[in-house]
Length: 129
Image 1 (spheres, helix red, strand yellow):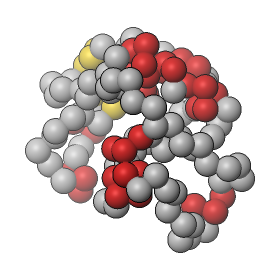
Image 2 (tube, rainbow, N blue to C red):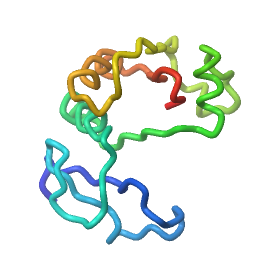
Image 3 (cartoon, rainbow, N blue to C red):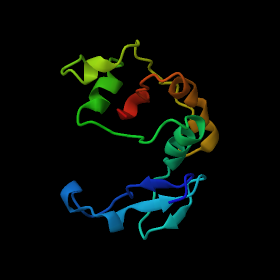
Image 4 (tube, rainbow, N blue to C red):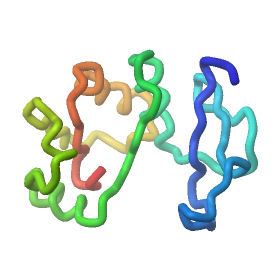
């Protein structure tokens, strides 16, 4: 596979995680365009592409909306550390919550990259990501 290609799990795939196979995974170019695959990508793909462009040492980007993430985000608070993995972050969390539009806008997504470059976890606004 081309070193600049990105593998991506598609948006709204009608399968559970246990049913997803290698043939469901999309291959994208460095700009986030589908090279291979039949599914749709999320409009926020630029967040993932920006990380790969800025941090060549990053091999995996996980963008997740935990079950209660939106509740904590709406409250403007960080959840407490519940397990050892969560405790591995050795920096203070940074909250980005200035809403200027959706992250599918490339310029707005790029503004959030400052904290990613600094290798900090970045909870984003009230969406609980």
